Length: 230
Image (cartoon, rainbow, N blue to C red; front, side, top):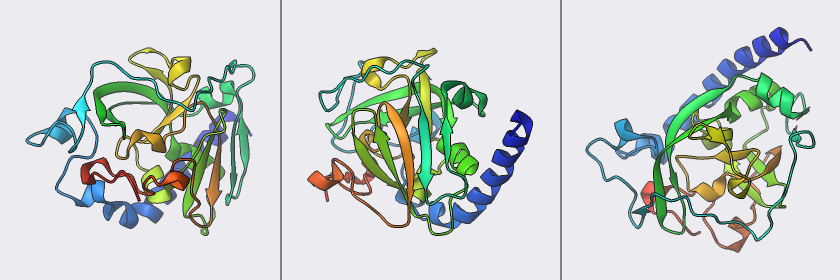
């Protein structure tokens, strides 16, 4: 498929997806609560800087499963499959050819620290979903990392415009120890919901527990509700 045709398909499918999940998104706590949405200063105006139990950090601590995958840009692939009409496998060049989004958001770790106003660049999960076109049966995604990490996210959360697969932070390539070349970020949820070193996004017809969810962490993971454990 030619680049312009692919882009037109993404834009058209993006609008249909937004319309399809608009009502569900409007009912999620991060939107319906009278609380910030995990974004930058405009959303924190007049509110606490961080959710209950969190402390602001200037550093960006490193947390992982003890595995540090080394993936070259030539080797990196992103597979999008499951309950979709058009399964795809993207190379690095394919990924960079998709619409690029820059956004500033906060990063809330369940281990009680928050880093504010991080500047990201990457591809919206919404646009990746639009490329693959989820079936009407799709309700959740499962994200897989090159370190075999997994985590689940409902589609009404995954398709929010600030959920990105990022390759740059603060104007620099995403460091390897923070999930480079590409990781997912979920500013309106605790950060474990975004897989580092992401390699696959599987669309599911029902919810399925990921690595930390199987170990007692919350399925929903809303920081402003102190929603850490199931």
